[in-house]
Image (cartoon, rainbow, N blue to C red; front, side):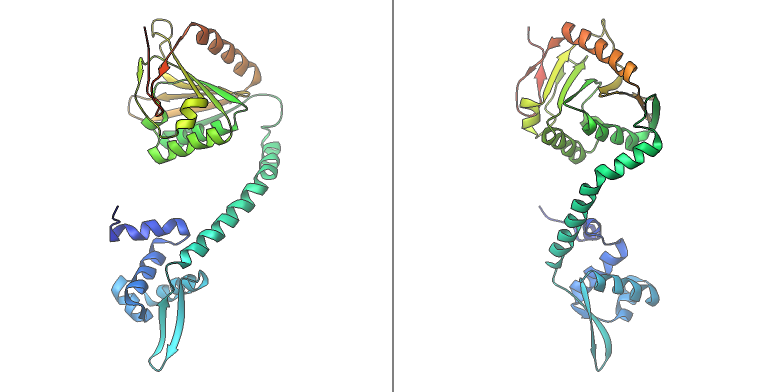
Length: 272
């Protein structure tokens, strides 16, 4: 697979480089050794700003400064230096992951989430829907859902697949009721399909599913697709409501017809 040169600055952003830092680094890689003045003229950036950005690249060990008879010049370090940046980021993530439980506990106690009672959180748009889906990773053991469509319909494929891999890693079972009679292949996470996903069909004459509903722990979540293409979601934290909705789900689950999963990619059909 070829990568367009124009896309390179964007590909370097996850390594902690801004667009302008990435452009300067790529220019240094191309020229090998050059001056700040040359960078400024070629990239149409002010010299003061160029010096500031070059200092950042030096801090990240992606560039070095040299002095010769002609003055100060800048040289790009080998691109393999990106491995070191990645290693640093992995270390930062490990520290964050280790401290996350304590941070969450502290924040939840201050917000009152850990206290008895109810709370409703509203979300809007695709970013909100994405957040609601990632919150499913909080589920203990399993979550139940009424679904209009699979996550691929509203999440980027890469993000949806990452979410499914996380569900497998956390051993969270997904049980879904749908009105659809055929589910086309939608994932490469075959372990989720074979071990951590069950799906059943219920006719719309019994229950017409018009919103995505997720039920887990003490949480009842609803996502509604508005006529203008917008999305509105809410999460209600209430034990009694979640228990009642879970009972409704279980009653409908008994009535629903089990769909046959016909391949490792999630295709499912109703058999006679």
